[in-house]
Image (cartoon, rainbow, N blue to C red; front, top):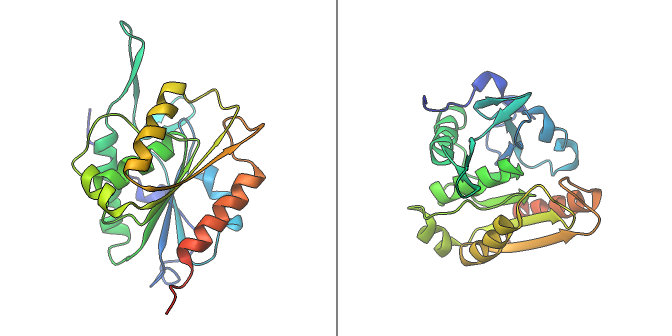
Length: 218
């Protein structure tokens, strides 16, 4: 399998290159079998401070795209995730060429895109300021940056629906154990919500982001 690469031409930006100068960057990472236009629809509801870039995942699947393939072991029925580390590297390479001078990077992902966001902060904990994890999960295993991430304890908003049957319970349980040891977690569970984002959750996300972009007290 060839190394993944982010398609520069597929990125959706909320601002022109000139208008992005000096602003923080918020990356949107869509879910499995989706595309860059999905989460970009949230842009009007998010704070105006950051320039927003919605990326397209590098792997074609069915009708959309994926950040990494899901591989099922037929003997154990366990799901493995291959290529997540390489895709994280591809996103960092895209950052280097598309936003080399940016000083603040936040991540907002949904489902597999949220898992990718967590993978990215594990790969480069000093380059990511915070993560919004919507209906996502943490991948298993250890990473070189895990210890540094636990030292920095970046703010992570983790929202999920109480009726979400897409993400296996064991992955939710793993994430509940793993996240507090590596981040400052704001965990929210929304009653009556399945594998989606409710209006109430979107309002909570906007408040979380406003707090991240608020000027520091003198």
